[in-house]
Image: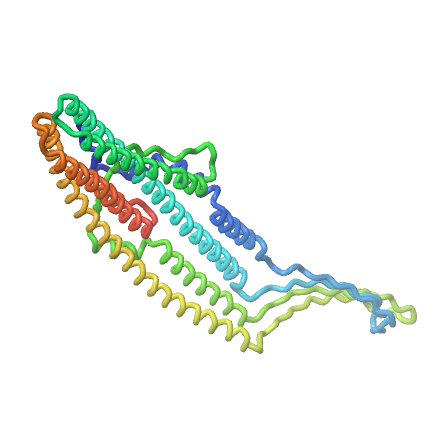
Length: 411
């Protein structure tokens, strides 16, 4: 007799799944091409920080082809060194801008990684559904084969017709066909999983024939509030707003003057016609330079550009927030609908199993209720499949919500 096929366990399934999935998460994150590309961009941006330095000093050498006569002698050549300095705060603002660019790139990696983890779990749940369906079909075949043996025994004593056996064989063949179709789905799911992790040594974690139900543990109001604080896409937009502000601060430094310090030395030859004091002594000349930006139209246009970027980011953030709120509402509705279905199908399965037991007893004793037994067996299989789909839908709705927060939230 078929027992209860789908065991629903209200337990903390996430901790089990997370432990089983940790090596798969790590492998997927390490091998995913897009994620690696974003991390390489992050490292490239970090290298720009060391490039933010003072401009290199300059040195100059000048020869007087036609010597310039002075009171102390003729000028023969001149050497000089100078160093330009950017506007006050420019280097600090530029480094801060680059660091913020790196943070934005890192957040983009977090978004991709979150999508990757969701894809892994989603494929895993699809595989779990197929394997649980296979278990249900196998148990259905066992029940039908039990009925077939009973029918054959009754034929021997003249209490059943051969038509009953044929009808049971039709049912068994139908179940076996369903079994083949389900088994045919598994290779594609395993391939999709393996393409994400790209590790030959890792096989898809086993999930058995049961599906552990996960439950919602937070009120809706809290979720709506938290999504504004924890969603990685909103965090990315916040970081981009900070990036725009730092870009604006850096652009403002271009309206400030830049400075330069220098030192020139002029070599003189001694006069031979006279011997004045300090005859032939070279000239040492310190210099100070300042460059004041007069034409500011270009930089003002850049500041306006950043201001418009900030406005665009604010609008984008509002739109993203609305979309996320809607996605959360839909996921919660899907969860509640699946939860209602799970409860209904559990009750239907319970009644169907009791009915099957009664009808099977009647058929084995009095040879009555064969048609009803076939019909109820079909209903039992139907409800068990519906229960599996509803269970997967409930769990999938919760991982969709977790995807919005980029972290586990539920039992």
